[in-house]
Image 1 (cartoon, helix red, strand yellow):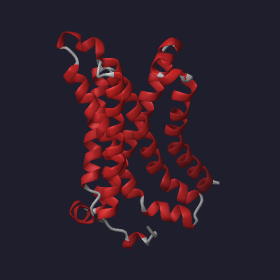
Image 2 (cartoon, helix red, strand yellow; image 1 turned 135 degrees about the vertical axis):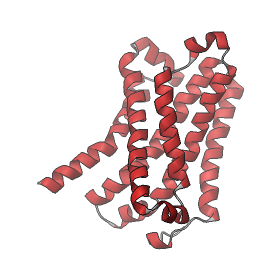
Image 3 (cartoon, helix red, strand yellow; image 1 turned 120 degrees about the vertical axis):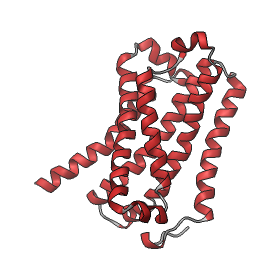
Image 4 (cartoon, one colour; image 1 turned 180 degrees about the horizontal axis):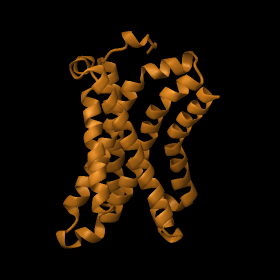
Amino acid sequence: MPLAPASQIHWNFRIVLCIAAITFFEYMAVQYYFSVSGTDIEAIKFAMRSTARFSCLIFCVTFCLGPAHKLWANATTQALLQWRRYIGVCFASVHSVHVWLIIFLFWVTPKIDLAANIPVPIYELLLGGGALVLMYLMVATSFDRVTRIVGIRNWRRLHVIGMYSIWAIFLFCFGEGYLSATTEELRSRAPMGLSPVIFYHPFLFLTLLPVVMRLWLLVRRSA
């Protein structure tokens, strides 16, 4: 599909279909994994870790587009920047599969074993829940008519707070999960015998990249 100027890119059936297809593909991949491995607690936790990484990849692409265009202004970064809204909505859509897995984990975990089997502490769930609320509010304001009702200033505040909140959750979860786990625990979380370096380091780097780019931009402006 040819890239049009930002003012000419609007929601249409092809964009919605593309987002729905990516989300459906992720959901079916999870279902296939469950059909092979079962739906015990460890299988659900692994699916959660995998979907979180897929969501993180799309989120970081969205978060990097703004500073990337300011650092390397050209036709390519301009064209990608025009599609940032839809990539962001795609992130929210695929991340909903991860949210479903969290709910599914609570559903299948016996109440007596709940405290021992939830993958994160309660305070992390509360912080993550707050970030999810902001995520869905950002989706709700990703339509021109809603943006006009909310006002551009409030829209900007919501999206800045929301993006940095989601980024902080990803950074905390990947960083804390990596630093606090033993080597044996990290190996047990990595799929198919992969090294923990492959399963953790790239996502820590990816999560840090958007803020590193913004700091680089500040240094260039102050130079």
